[in-house]
Image (tube, rainbow, N blue to C red):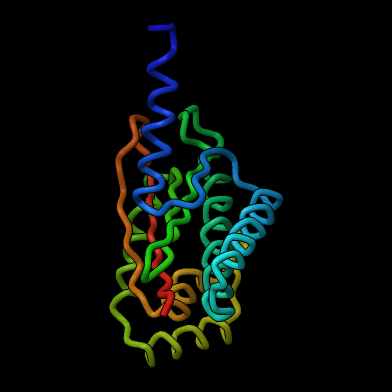
Amino acid sequence: MEPHSSHLESVYTLYQDMIQRGFTLIYEGEVNHQITKTFTSMADENMGKVSEDDSVRKKVYHVMVECLQNICKHADDTEQSDSAYSGNGIFIVGRDDNAYHIISGNAVDANQKEKITQSIDFVNSLDKDKLKELYFKKLKEGSLSEKGGAGLGFIDMVKKTGHKLVYHFDKLPDGDFFFILKTTISRK
């Protein structure tokens, strides 16, 4: 066996796993405006190849942009850290017969974990009418955070997709957390 052949075998295993799980895009690294434009363009092209409905395409695009912007915002919080996770994120787009799945992951400062948890749990607890009411209330208040958002991201994703957000945190060695967010967009 040649040196590094196990690395090559693991690439093939990863490829098979991607196909089996319906992952059409996997990226790990720095996320910026150019990356966002590239990914949304690639996803739109892929959805065009399978003649995806325009309303589904718009929802996928919107959720992708929101998730990628969240990675960028949290990267600013952690880039001072020496952690291998700081400033980078993971971004995955998957598709099955019924839905698209957008999965993002990035390091978040330990003091952000509780705030993110409360925000998602609160948004997930609301029905369609309450989501709409909260969305317009936030728009009306118009108070932008120092990161540029008005707290609309999670609300808007649930409102547009009609699906609850799924999330998970893993503790990192430096005390921060790796935040994973999954959003589902129905194809029907």
